[in-house]
Length: 160
Image (tube, rainbow, N blue to C red):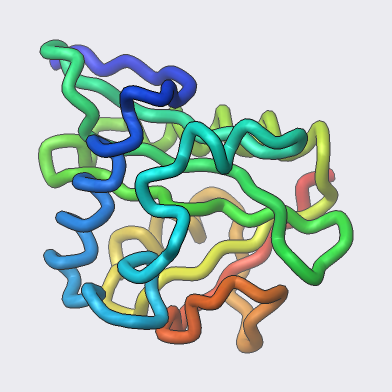
């Protein structure tokens, strides 16, 4: 199966929102305090057009979006970005495409920030293993002001 990584376009917004909502349903995270109620869902091409931000999508051989993820500013934390809304449908997992996306995201982040933060859920164990394999260190306290108070697992990575 062939996958393509590219930057998000305006016409991708709805498809990315569908991927994220599908994953949140799968993991029981379709409630307040997660990306489920994020007011920016469906506005990715606009939100990630600001300096120091970028969002990528992964498409399959039919050009359908099967995942995505981005780098955004972490409100309230100078020099720290956040790996945001990185989700993949089951058909995109375990195939190396998340690694390709993360590599692109971290390469971009290094140009703008000194550390990268992320939040996830305790039941997303494969994601946690993936982040740890990539040098993220679990921390106890939330950083910044993400509004995702239901996310109970947090990681940080030094970028330099």
